[in-house]
Length: 442
Image 1 (spheres, one colour):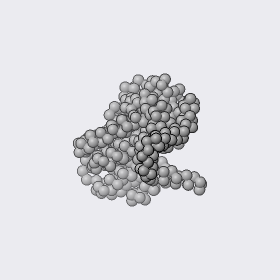
Image 2 (image 1 turned 60 degrees about the horizontal axis):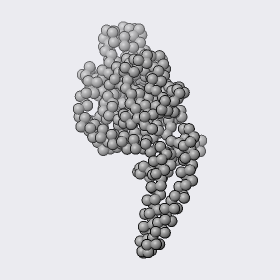
Image 3 (image 1 turned 180 degrees about the vertical axis):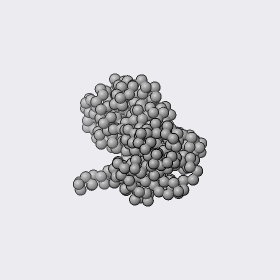
Image 4 (image 1 turned 45 degrees about the horizontal axis):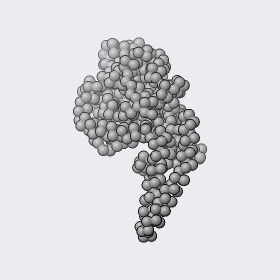
């Protein structure tokens, strides 16, 4: 079963920002929808951030990795061999383990940073809404979120973690020395921008302008962070007033171009400008860096800042990896159980255990000591368990004969009877119930 799971990805370890932006997925939903049509593909989930693209695919035995490379490179108008050279591929339980590490922020540029978990949850929600996440991906992602929570709870890996936005502001501080009295501009109003505003304010930046394609989002962030929203269409009108520009939009093309910046610089009378581009694909044309008095840094330039913080968390990372590896092994057992026969064995074993536990209580309470009566009661208890399970097991066998239906029903049976002995929180389904109520109200 596990050999059908593929994870193909590229990240800040394997590819520079120029390659990452070439193969970044600017429309993940469309990518997943198209990949689902590739013969042999049953489930898909893709994650695309500034530092990584991860594509999880569950497929039939005949699915080949070349099909995924061809599809991905084709969607990005790139070369499949270039993508393959700069990427990695994991199969089966190795793919699961890698995704657990990504969710736990062990594979992040800044180990322990919390943003990746939110990005992964968002990608998973998209896959569920698009209908490309099925039994296997659902289970992997829910387990990944559980593992990430364990890592953050049981280790101190997040205690001194920083964010990409923090690293960007630290770099600005190194360049300017003191940020007091300077004006900054943020292009984009997402989580990265929000974090950057908070750090800039802490270091005494005098004024922060926020430009976003959706003006209402810029206004909302500006109100929360005591900044000033400016229309995206007037970007070049305001960018010249700022000394520090941090850009983190999801645009598939450059929003700051060298040609336009030449005009801006003339008006600034050659006062220096500092740009940090933490978007992938990059928001700022690399040619901007060739202009006089402009200092442009992209996300890969933040590595030196990040390294200063990394050593403090490496010991905790070792503990975290032990948790991840243990949970991956446990997950491997679940994958193997999706074959019908192990589940049937587990069902009868569960029924037999329950029957004999209840029988033992009854025998003790009634003080039954007669061997013949005891044997008859044991036979009765075992027989009731088998008869109760006869119809459910027959149902599972019939579904197994229907292509593509077996995993879903086997997984459902394992969850209904809790055959994997998982601890279910009492509030596990509260959100689901609330969501259902909201739909009913709508």
